[in-house]
Length: 292
Figure 1 (tube, rainbow, N blue to C red):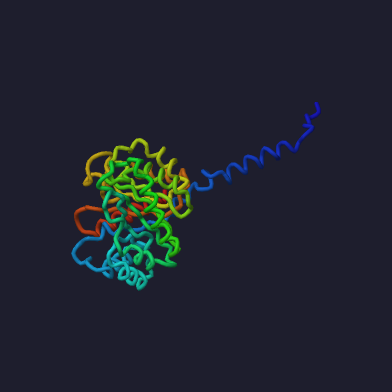
Figure 2 (figure 1 turned 135 degrees about the vertical axis):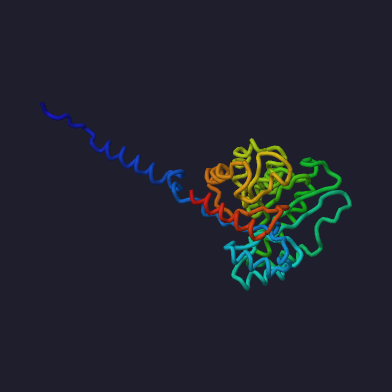
């Protein structure tokens, strides 16, 4: 009996190379086994212990531990930049605020000068928005917020920087949904958003995190995280990265799912104990988690 010969033997090659392409080029497969490579920096909220009083002392500790830089809050911006330069570290973010309420000062008069100091450094402006006269998340205040954000974004643009809106519990711009709404209305490539894990849990949006990451994805510049419980107040929602019952590995998996490659800041606000020990624990946890 003669073997059956297909009239179109090339179809096997098409199928073979099609499967080969899928295995080697699909987004999920291309990341498999490589872990996360996002920059992981320390926010200054975790650098408040005896012996960490000056920019130089804070930077020397970060250098010793292996952090690449610090997310800083004014004042002493020039001093911190000088200390970072001396140790070969950098400032991924500068945290500042704006106020849009009636008769409120829009922002610190030193803000333009502080942003100018960042020229050529690639630092992102972390911008929170608050108001004493507007209800939290009320879109009726959007026009005032947009005008102020745009003004600050213009300062940032002149320095070669960009703005990442920073949602904060209890502030007017409280949720990442608010930040995305504003960024969409402003619609410029140098204005994006930050996803803050602890604030998202605190406002009751824990179950929505995958959907909120999808919402933020087109404008997502930065993420902040920390160890946390699934619910509670700040002592439960901000812990070292190796603590808490919230699934940090699952959250990092979500960041990988949306292909987020931007910097990730370590939030340590209000954590008790020795800053060095806490930062060591979190960095060790980060290395273990991201290697998986």
